[in-house]
Length: 193
Image (cartoon, rainbow, N blue to C red):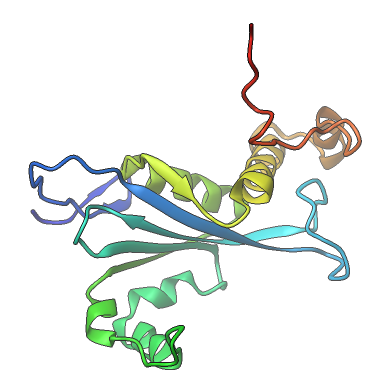
């Protein structure tokens, strides 16, 4: 099956083997606070989400599909160059101290996407995830931070860019930090009996 493009996003089809499998997305986002002594806050206009790194296991035994979505100048497009990927991977070591198998790693699909701004990056990443029909999501602290931060930044920037609202108008719509209840997987599902 040949790769194709859908709505400007490259899509790499995986042949159906007859087996049922789950497509697993692993991701992490990177953000930077205006004040580097503080933790990033999605409601601070100057704290920026600048990169979302993702990998999808398409099927057992198939290579990973890796992607980086970033704002312009944050480096995502560099992974479209096999030589640059090989250079970075060649400088890394496996957990046991051995060098990575570059031939095996370069056989994985690497895709880099740069967007003009945060909102475009979030939209491109969301479209990419939907396009690949992901069944499960994994990542370090995604439920405690990444999902809420990315959603808040998406809403904040969309209301400002698309609806012409000021930063003050948008943040007035959000709950205060004191009112916001973080999602807790232990209490998210309640017993109705």
